[in-house]
Length: 273
Image (cartoon, rainbow, N blue to C red; front, side, top):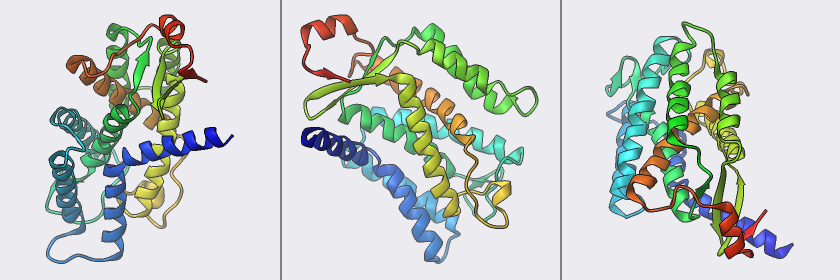
């Protein structure tokens, strides 16, 4: 029991270290909500703070230049989604700001980028390997359909549940292997998607509480974000996983897939459920 508890603490510590960017975002949201800053609007200060944090993480070596590329890509993808959703009235950014595009402050893209930052750092810290990762011929169209559905469901039927079913089918055999304290563990990849999506939903509640953005039902007073948003974040996590996995495969820093049967036979003591 003590050994398991120690492993859990180690696991939590490694993931906490991977959350430096998200923690910096929450801290900035809280501070600027409590303490008004001079000269610039709150949204503009947040934008400048997040740029500074991103620069510091690369400068200090916490993030590599290759990881910065994928994080920047995710920033652009997230900002495009934000502009469309605000235009459709899904949520809003009611405060003033100079660094805004189509009613969306530029800092919003960093909140999506922080998800990619977490994935990149966690991948490196706990030595993630994807077991039986499906062919990219299946994953790429699925990820594209997931992203497009965030736009098209406003004009057509919402197929998120069909897409969720396809995710289960495509990733049915896929597992994620990771290392804690020199011991390797594994879990179903679909379960890791659900867990990440759930914790992002918790983070979303914290962010809206500090006024990062505002849903229509939060205009009068803050209220809990609908639990159904977990499915949206779960699907978005799939897209980010694909981007990060592609980066790792191209650069060859981590194997994208391993033979589960062979690994168990050669190293029978390091895999634990």
